[in-house]
Image (cartoon, rainbow, N blue to C red; front, side, top):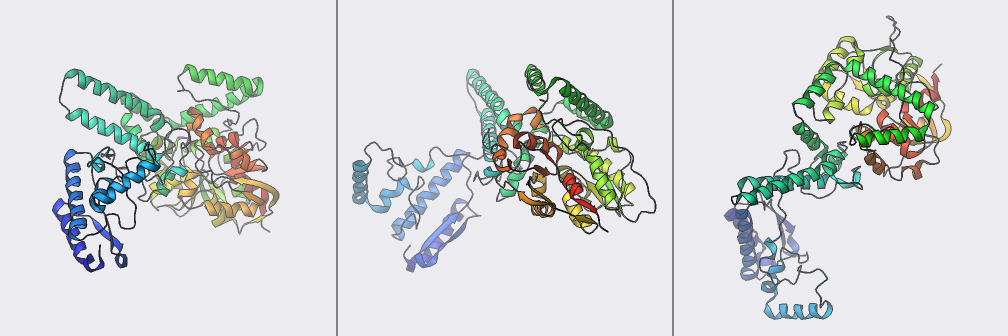
Length: 552
């Protein structure tokens, strides 16, 4: 706008906002240049909303061009939204000249077609992308794509943005089906199309979503698409699956014992038959079961021995409640390729006792779980029930929170931390070691190059740099492939959808091929990292135990 009329134009623009009901609109710009920009939220999912927007734009153009002899784009270029108004802004003669120049240099109209020269007066309200409400956890998404670089499935199927867009399309068609009148044949076709779309969405949508939540750390409005996916998984559960989940929860000790024995049996079979046989047999069985059966891989751990009772010392001044996660208890043993043969719980106890701590286990340990596995599968009520059981057990043995809790697995600890809400001081391995053990142990860094993988939970808790700090205290050189984010193993996805893990860790081996070993803080993540990194990955607790001795 001409500077002399800028204030009046701003008031007139505000009046148009009021006239058309854009009460939340904001104005900003560059006053010395006479530029005004405005932003408001617009719903294009209903015809009357499109009509409202069309009438508003017509009035904005008339005000700018006719009343104030202004320019429609300020310092920005012409786009589809302003293409229908270029002739009005510049006049018929200038517009005719533009078309002649366009015809000379682009006779086939292949360069930016319809964006500046467009004969359609309604081009700005055609082919609009509607964003219907689809889920309260994701409705704020504007599909900017900031989440995409950290998504483990970005090179395999969908990104978080695409998962939300896919759900929006399903919601749009569902709404159209419910409101549409017409012949029964047409309505049946609509239902069939919607069913096909919903089925087609299953694999790239819920099935290959790791639900790790890293997308929420990049999203400007903190949308965690994984939470939406977990909610959708919950909505898909029927009575039978809920009963099975409840039975697993109520008999958790039997389930973990069965898994541990099964893994130990598979480990012995692997030793007898070799890797090729196991891979082929597992792949055949999984295919016969329509990929519902977990696939064995060469880094599959053994179950290890049951967690034994901790030695008691009532006079010990240093105490810690140790909760080995169910993954550590059920699959904490080494694989056939692993040179460190101690199971993770035993190694953790060894380190703690070296530092002078008495280890205390919660009562009924084998039946305890933080609920992480149930939550990720879409059973939040059962997950909270298990977390409540754990909370009660830890309170009892921690002298009502006076003694800190250590959990050896970062994803489990993050859920525990959220559920306990500060009632008990809780730590995962990195924070516990840096807080309590550094002054009680003497570190002798090994002269080797090691790799590091901060889990998604480690990143979300802001501990990735503390993990690096600890690793630097243990080894001469640390490699951190920063472009590797979520590993995509996602609890059991590495067994049931192994292509997700493979895609997420593509290129990892080139970064860590010169490393002696890799370290992380989640047993299941370490399985996939070992498989695709080409080096053994294990808990950081192994490294700390290896390079330390009691301080004299």
